[in-house]
Amino acid sequence: MKTQIKKVLILGSSLLMLSLLTGCDFTDYKTRIQRENDINNPTGNKSVCLRVGKVYEDMYPYTIQYIEGEIDPDDAWDKIAANNELNLKLSLYAKEGLFTEELVGHDGDKPLYRYNLTEEGRKYVDWWGGTNFCFGRVVVDKITKVDNQLKGMRMVSFSYHMENVPNWIKNKDIYSLYPNFFDIEAAATGKELARGTHYYNVNDYGELTLKAGKSGSYFL
Image (cartoon, rainbow, N blue to C red; front, side):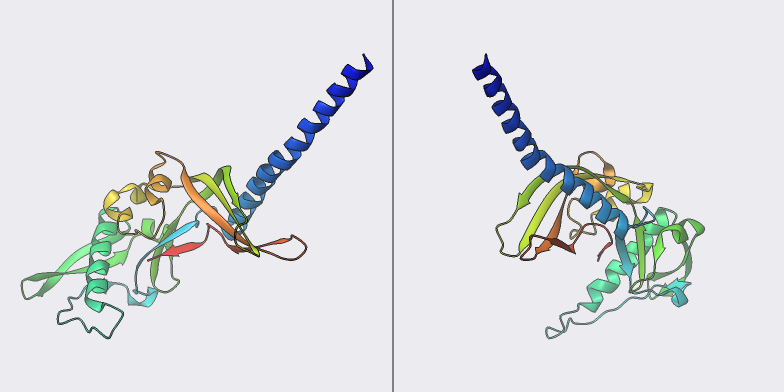
């Protein structure tokens, strides 16, 4: 009888230790990462900011322009492509009600449109480096991987969904313009869980310092 009790106690202790080693890791990381996202995004509406372009607040109402000519091979910044993309983004966001759009003339046979922010657009606008539209709150669903392969760094991967997602970002024509926003379709549409990673520096005492997180990111 004593032997059976001893076995039960040993088994119970082993399960408890296993729970602490796995459940604690995952539960603590989930709580920590959620808190870090919320600290970086206290309003719950600025997890992601998508750049429209270098149009600053005092430049509105803004009339588009057309840039032509040869691309300078020594210039890393393709001004023609950037201007074309700006014109396209203004047009697409206008269709979603974030800008007004007014035909004000022509440049040869090309139409010139003037844009201004609507009240709806001002709900989402952020002026860091030009015009950006921000939205969303990251909600962590589960931890998927803890990676310690790099010395002095820990990478914690997780799956998440987003709250406070406006209808305009669900337009594929818009979110497809931001290929650097990893998993944007999942985050925008909610059809599946999105994936994210937080990167930490690890000191000699095993203490973690967040190096890069998910919320508060700007995408060109």
